[in-house]
Length: 247
Ligand SMILES: [Fe+2]
Image (cartoon, rainbow, N blue to C red):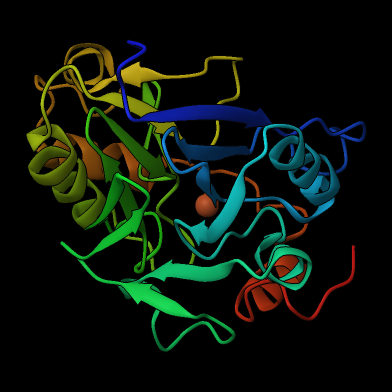
């Protein structure tokens, strides 16, 4: 990233020592900091990592303005409410989650923007993994949550998921972003940090441009993926922005 870019992205991995019994691992969180004002946001914070993440913000001299969620996660509990309690940051969910989540300060609908310093982050509704999934676009980068992964995509069999909707979200909305847009996914299970829209158009295993909607839908509907281990705890907790559960 060029030194003149107005923002810096810090990628935060989830390190989970009990991976065999808890599929929280491989969640990705991101701090985006506006260079000029030192204002920052955190995207998809994980409750167990809040102390670490706040320490990074403190070390870097950043003021956290917003704790932003791409969707209601089924695999881990969000750190949003704990972060709000400790920093005063406002909790932001995508507009698609309105009606499903309490304790949210702002819902960001398609095309609506959050400004922190000179950096502007814009919501893009990308339903399909859940019905309320939202991606967040910066100039030159997009945080795709569980809609689009590096070479893959999120499951579509839970939480109002729809393979048809996910296909349209990726192909009509995410793939409409400039080809060199950096893709920051909500998970990666193979240690990859980011991709680009061009790479995913070419190489995504299920959504590259040579694959049609029917094939994608068939593939997704055939998949048998185990339920997330913490799902019955995580979903209710995340429906109150992580407020009900202590770390
Ligand atoms: Fe998810």
